[in-house]
Amino acid sequence: MDTTPYADVNAVVYHFQGRIEAILGPHFRGMYLYGSLALGDFDPKTSDIDFIVVTNGDIADDHFLALSEMHKTFEESGSLWSRKIEAAYIPQEALEDSAPSEAKYPQIEKGTSLFREHLEPGWAMQRYVLREHGIVIAGPNPATLMRPVDPADIRRAIATITRTWLEQAHHDPSWLDWLRDRDAQTFVVLTLCRSLYMLEFGTVASKPAAARWAQQILDQRWSAFIERSVASGKGEAPQTDIDDTVAFIQYVVEHSR
Image (cartoon, rainbow, N blue to C red):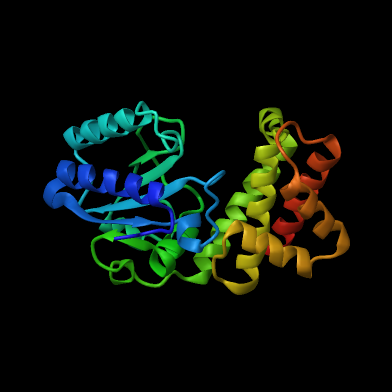
């Protein structure tokens, strides 16, 4: 079965599915693609493979170790996707949490080993994409596992993220150092565009789609800035773009109030 239009992505996805089901056994509830694959703006050159595994209960230590070894083996496999996997193992009951709780769940980000951590502040957006657009690899339709996501939860998550970024921009030099990397700066700008889209419509769009929308509805200052940020290549962002990025964060914070 072709889950996505990309044969190599399908091979990776089913590689993981078979091994995860074997490790978790009856604790496995379902596996779903989300992120850019689910939202239809996947770019094989730059995108990651994002998936959520839904479990019956928390992951036991022995299962965590086995999953960790599985991810390590894949990272060392030489696959072009070996460092472009982002995944989370979430118990079904946590799908109903409107905001990240104090619980820590197994997760992996590109280039990391499996770790246990709190869910990201953007959990509401991830829940929305999973429920409304998630691609089923195995298990029931995700809409049967969770209630619809309240748009107010999405707006609260946006406010948390953007206010945190604004605080870091003003008081954390290390964050500004990170922002100077063009990839990081582009990521922030695209996320801000998607935040504006979600504030307007209460639904989640892909980052590229939200950027295209923002360029059409914002004034020339912001539309030109967004175009410049998205079109730029690798390297270090100039100080003018850093200043504009911080100003754009402030703009979105004001719209989230």
